[in-house]
Amino acid sequence: MSPLTLLIIATVAFVGSHFLMSHPLRAALVGRMGETGFLGFYSLVSLVTLGWMVWVAWTMPAMAPYWVAPPWFFAWAAPVLMLIASILLVGSNIGNPAFPDPSGKAEIVRPATGVFAITRHPMNWAFIIWALTHIALSGSPMNLVVASGILVLTFFGSLLQDKKKEALLGDAWQGWEARTSFIPFGAIAKGRVPLSAAWPGFIPLIGGIILWVAASYFHTMLVGVWAWTA
Image 1 (cartoon, rainbow, N blue to C red):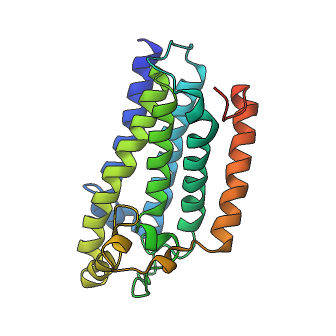
Image 2: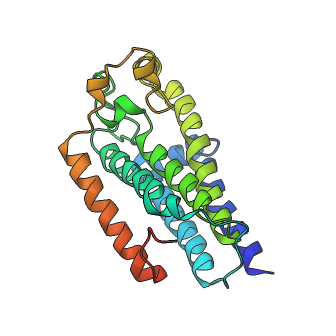
């Protein structure tokens, strides 16, 4: 079996296990394990399959890319996109009503503000931006498999999560959907949210900058070059 084939299998395992456990198998697993037990099992499977995917990608031999982005994309477009993704990711961890809540007391009656005024799925959009940016940066087979897997997981995962939350929370989640948008800035463009509400806040902004700098630094350590050089 070639390393690329093994990477595809590992990526399918990572993405597929997320979809299976989050949707068709979720009710049965929660019934057997309880909500807290299910979350622990879900996290373990996710960690193992992610580790497998990363290990295969890290150890496979280099393969010639189908394309490489022009220097201007490395120099400023990719850094700006990844900074936006970092801010969305940090902001998504503050009062996210989509997070699993074993208490069943999800707070989704508040107005949409911060990164949630931009999109109700800021975490997934952070990874969507990451995936699209990395696909644009390099068409190496390894990069295409990993980034495409993350893209499929986060894009379709967002859509399926809305369906799941509608079934679980009914009118409360539908009201949240009505006040927000899946596509970034969609609710603002339609006048459902004022532009001023999309200020991410100081913690997401400062935390996003710190995350962006740290990720760029560790990229240098792991890959051997500064993240934003061609």
